[in-house]
Image (cartoon, rainbow, N blue to C red; front, side, top):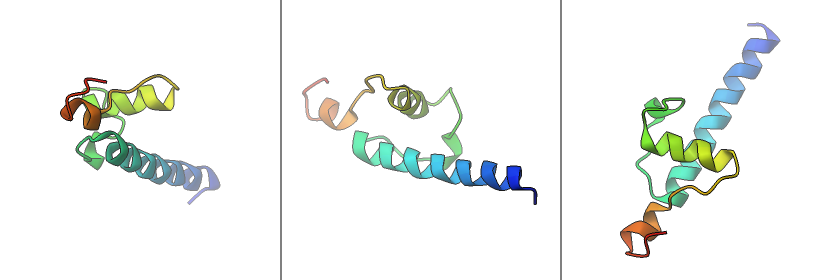
Length: 67
């Protein structure tokens, strides 16, 4: 396996870990199959979060705070 391929694989696993942490912190159902799937609401919110924008916090929403 070439060094570039190893870096890509490492990046995917890092993204999966970050996505998992985001889902835990913001109250989304974690499904690794939705990583990089822009049709998934959770992944779109994760993308916003990574870009430094405000993502919808489902824990606050479910608590009635409608953040």
